[in-house]
Amino acid sequence: MCQCSDTQAQSIREQIRHEELMIYNRIHWMLTFQGFLFASLAIISNTNADAHIRSVLLNTIPLLGATAGLLAFIGIVGAYMHMHEIRRPLIKAAENIGKDFGAAGMARWMGRANSGLLPVILIFAWIKLYFELT
Image (tube, rainbow, N blue to C red; front, side, top):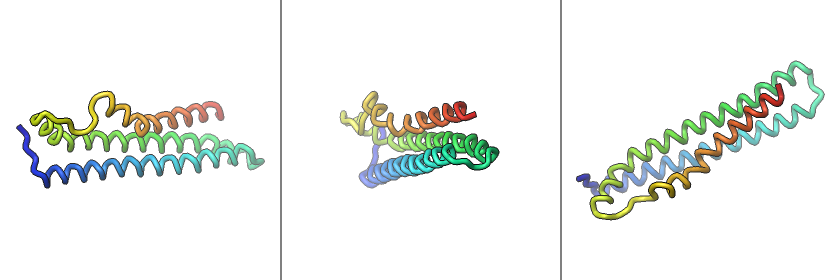
């Protein structure tokens, strides 16, 4: 049976809050960067710049966007994996006294869907744009 003191439980909760903040920051920075890339793509596609430079930028920007989405996704998955590991003692302790600790099952996955799927959707959008522009 796993026993957690109040200070251990508080420390675990603080670590979870930290990971949740990191997920929020990753999504925020990813969306900000994606917005700049989409705007850059629109500007470049509407200019009469040198054909070679335009071609290079039209090929590079979607790759940057997809890579940024992939890196954000990896960071978010890593944060959720870490949260699962640090929650384990609290989940076990709650089960031992017949209580729940946090959402479980489908509710947990539904709560994580936007942070996990948003980078994936953007990756596919950038890949589609890449193949449309080349």
